[in-house]
Image 1 (cartoon, rainbow, N blue to C red):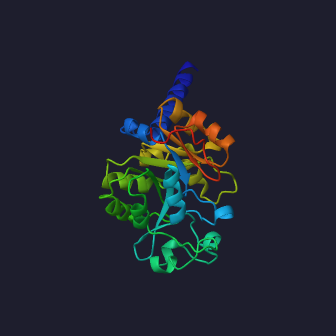
Image 2: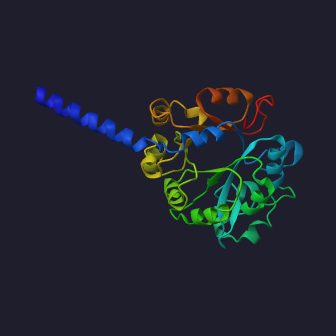
Image 3: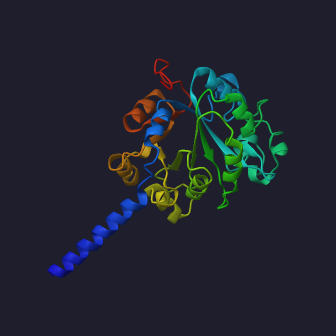
Length: 282
């Protein structure tokens, strides 16, 4: 009986240690990330479609964020002709009212599609870099609809001469692993959430992602997590046990923002302006 209890206890201890090993982050860049944590990040730029006709992930949205002194979160796809286009969704229906995806079209085709019925169009990443010109940090999300990580090579090639500060994040752990091999100096963030039953995702991938066991592949320097699920076990252990730097997504009201500030180092926000008395980057 005692032998059986000891064996059971040993197995449980091994499983717990293995789980902690899978979810732990990299510990390399905690000091570097302190500088990035001093900023609030405008989600897809400082857009305001209803009142000002400024769509998300557009040059006016990024220009407005810079003018207000906010860092910028943006999304990047690799087009059919290997150009880096700034756009969020996996398909074009919501924003451009057409079928298809960024990966299935050329950059020229995509840039002919109006954003949300406005006169604005998808910018290339190089256009955004020229606009921002290092004045505020960038939080760049790599969008990968498949297991191919070619986008990492193209992003790295474009950014290698960029003088401004930036972070790379992705839901795709293989993308982060690939980017680290290309440039170990860049801080990398694992995006995740505790997904609902309605989320269209392979159940196994959903479990791996929400539990942050994907960290065993990506070994991120920080975590970007849905702030509504800050009580998720993998996230809570990262924060309390490993003191992993964390970015909250996405605060959409002052109330959300205050909640994020209690549990996260930096906040990604939209649809309101954070307290202007809060100094950015100081």
